[in-house]
Image (cartoon, rainbow, N blue to C red; front, side, top):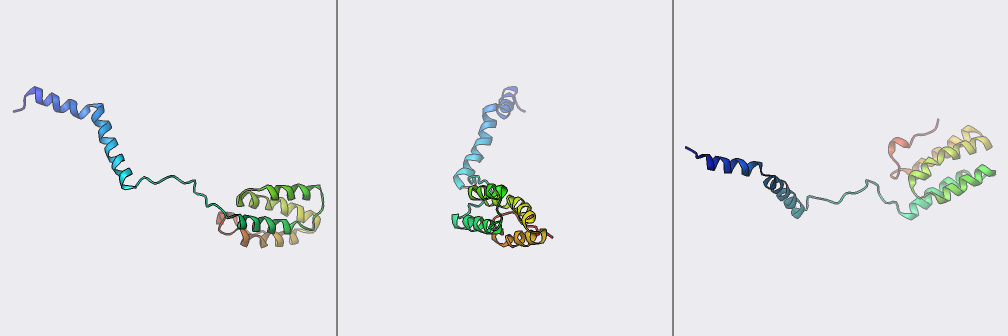
Amino acid sequence: MQTSASFATRRTRRHDPASRLENAVIPAIARFIRGSLKPRTNGRKTIPLKDLQAMRMALLRCIDDCDSVSARRLNHQIIHAQTAQELWLLRNDAYQLISRQTSQAVAAERINALISSFQGWVEPSQLVRIK
């Protein structure tokens, strides 16, 4: 039969905060040593500068024949956009500008032609054609 001293020792060892910490830290250290703790990434691919410039130039060509204060403002925004997402979001402004200067059909045609430039850099769910 167990003595009360051995039962008390075993009981306190199980509920000791230091042993809980030890039980949590040792497996974490083992995973770290094995390399299963990988550095976190933000999930975004870094776009090469030449691809970003190609997208920028395609968008600028779309509004090339537009001449107004709005066109110059959009031109400035396109030049200073730093990501493919920023450029893709500017396509709506380009559509509005082109449709005011020409027609909605021409604007839709030009904006839809941009989709191939942005494939692989913008979420596929956002690459929707204008009808």
